Image (tube, rainbow, N blue to C red; front, side, top):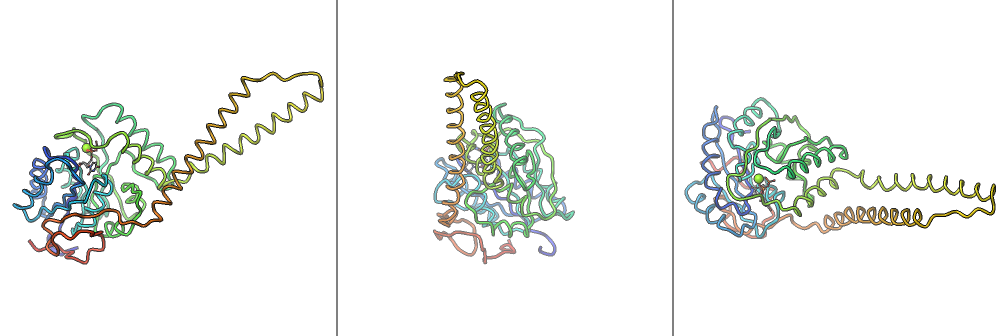
Length: 338
Ligand code: UDP
Ligand code: MG
């Protein structure tokens, strides 16, 4: 950590946020400049393949403020990978990840920095309230975090998003985890170091609407579960064992019945159908589940770069080299001395 004024990076993923970024930039810059004792800051905007005017707005901001850097990805890679590229490109002594839609109030960063100065290596935001989100989202989110926590071997903070501050040590550790199915909030928790929660009220979006479609949400949930738990795989073993015992028991009952009363006929078309269909379903589900894990192994085994950068703005070392995987930044770590 630099001696006097630490550098704090603020990483913000941007996907079609043209109406909100200017306001985000103003509020965040203001919030960072009023932190006491003062910190230096840089903003790392990641343009995650926006198809609206977001990149133009970012260019304009970057042209007037050297502290605003832009990583322009070659296409839409999704929230988690956008965050990853931003973290890879951040040079600060601490890195804050925040959504660009102003749902996470930038003013809260001051409190995070304070806790970091108190010695914590990770300060993660916990939402006490979520304004402006529909009941379905609230309910699914709540249920998901609780189910995941049940399943996971790593304790994962409940009701915590990706709004968090991480010390350089944690960031370096995180940069070493190059898995493709990323559930970053879980990965940070898995890394360890001293972590603490900071409660805050989540605001409604400043502009636009959520970029998390139902499909993205489901993928995200499955990523979270499969990368932090192997328990679903064990469920089929348990179900298999239980049904084996039940069928053994039923077989004995039937044999005993035949022995005691040889002329009896056992009725049961309906019950037979139900049992056959039920286990057909269970088997397909288990195979599908297995497929989820196998598919992930397959994707990981290709070891592809996580993302590609089309262009980088306001990075002193290079200007606009493609096929840049980011990560092992040998470029200036201690800021560009602005
Ligand atoms: N985002 C992104 N890529 C995506 C989807 C979202 O970079 O594919 C960004 C988005 O611009 C926002 C943040 O990730 O800054 C959180 O997304 P959003 O607000 O849509 O999610 P929600 O808050 O509704 O869960
Ligand atoms: Mg949002």
